[in-house]
Length: 118
Length: 281
Image (tube, rainbow over all chains, first blue to last red; front, side, top):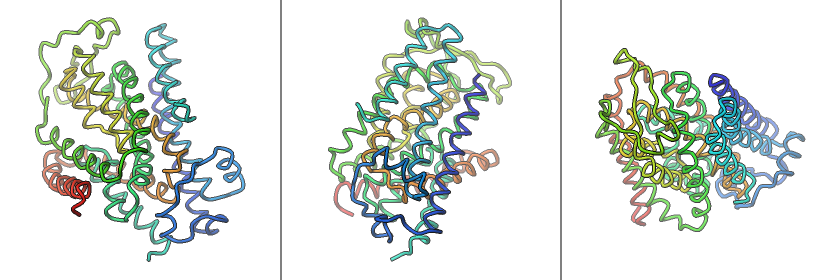
């Protein structure tokens, strides 16, 4: 099971890196998506606008380079969160109630942080 | 002005170097990314922190996999302390939005300087002796053992000072969420000095925890729009490549020599950040 967890970590990081690289290549090959930054100056001074989940996934499916990178970043954030979720399964198979509780609270904090409710 | 493609290549190459040096010195890649982006490329410190926290997840999740396999990581201790680091990281990420950029530079410089101390002192080099488990450690069965390759035997150890370690871990989490770094040095310090774990176990467990701590604040930065895709992409890929190379090279190099070479670099970088915080540079 522990070995399984370390495989998930590796796979998550590699998958996320591939998606991020793909997004970067699309940006270079196709050019910026409509309204996207066209110069280094614009990239460095991106106005702080909040990101919306709907926009990210729609854009990524449509081949929007920036949305693709954002999907990769989300996959990266989800990797350790998945690891924590798997640990709950590990502790419950060992019938370790206290650690199931501790790990569940950690998972709750992570999920709340991810969906921005805290 | 640089072309966009050239910008990607330069940021990627610089991030490879940052990841490489970071993992050789033992501080992780993240700690050099914020100075690199702010001082080197003139990136706003908030966006630099956003890019850095993402790269921290990338490198630590890769490294943690190896340590779990070597049985050095104390997963129970790590899980318990993650309660403290994740809540701390969420606190830090929220507070960061209300803090003046100069203060962020200043804090970064101070934390970077503090991170050097454990490397210089090489604290807890020998195995801790006569550690009595405290009540919480007994109740949660935190004591454990690991195979020590250099000693050639199985080492068993006790765990003490859990409440104090927990408190220090909360602070490490706040620092991580606030500055976009793994704050591995602070985590090792908490486990080494407060909880008296063997050094190898402390480092491995700290690495195991860094990715989860970073994931707690990364979501907040992401939805806030502080993770700029076109900055974060070359940084995350670069640090990942650099840290992987560093881990391979480390086996061949003498740890102490590497540290002696790079510690002055770390000192200069932290002074530079401090000066920015003070508004001199």
